[in-house]
Length: 180
Image 1: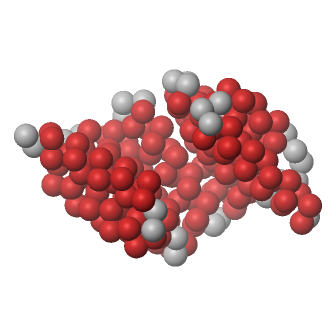
Image 2 (image 1 turned 180 degrees about the horizontal axis):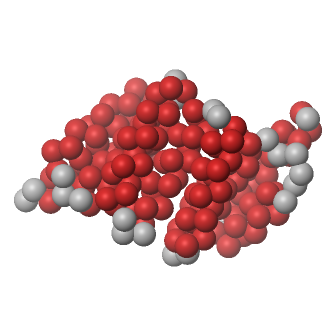
């Protein structure tokens, strides 16, 4: 079991490195191959599906990303672990936003935040708040978006995650731009 977990972590790292280098087709191939392995833990599968969905979105294949988000949600519900559910719901919200369905992401976002809080995962909560802020901004519920974005900024700052903090600042900036 430990060897399988290590294999899953190594595969996740390789997929993440390929995606970070902008090699999204390769990242998708690596993730797909890794997902064929038997005995992968649910968390490893979710990480691989999450990374594959991210690369699919980067390539403009939102349909494939939506399928991965759906599979993530099924796995997370079966595992009954709030952190996995938060991860899956955060991915689903992002896909909904990219599909132009921000009204759905405004519903999905709070569910992701609730699951993250149950899991005690501030990183997933911050991501959920950022996703919610973007969805609210796109729906032009500007004060709610500003509140969500600022909460995400504070959490990301507390976590020492400048990339997430910068994205949350973008959501706030876009919200304020909506307001003129």
